[in-house]
Length: 238
Image 1 (cartoon, rainbow, N blue to C red):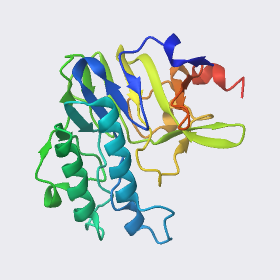
Image 2: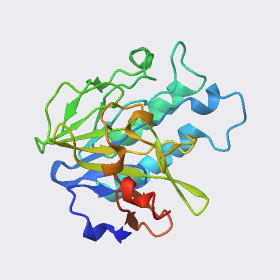
Image 3: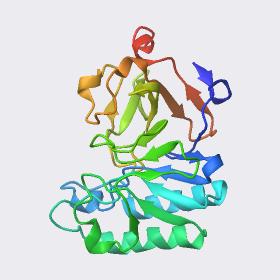
């Protein structure tokens, strides 16, 4: 296990999000606005307010010029859950107030997105660095890239009985390109425990050999990022 200074990557891990400094872009995935309202059980937090407040903190800290949502901004298939339009408006206003542009790459839960969102959407978005393509990850990307940033699987790592949201980074793991899988931005997602998962267990087709992916966990209290050995090696240590 190492700290983030020992890992040579062109991005900085934040609170369930990632910053690409060279492109001045903040990327987050799986916000699932409306998940609490759509749930049959009482949610422990107001997912809309929680997402907006945490986003506001990220924007103040990182000062990006662009914010990209890598899919599943909403949690809806056939209807828009109660309160989602209000929460979405606050989300958009928060990005606008920070002087950043908002781009959404729709995910499989975003079937109703065009009914409530008038902003910019694109299936795959290439960052200004020219090397990085962001998409949700539920389908194979069409654009060639040196790295892909996706969501979709909500990865989490179990450490000493604690289940923690994690990032998964696989160098040259998809047709020679790097793959970065983001954790769900919503704190209501239980997360998929990756400790024992093989490539076939992931929903995204961009993870073919899970053993080659390095998990990274951010300590919310200190902001420290801990990188772990690839899953194939880590399984023998946990």
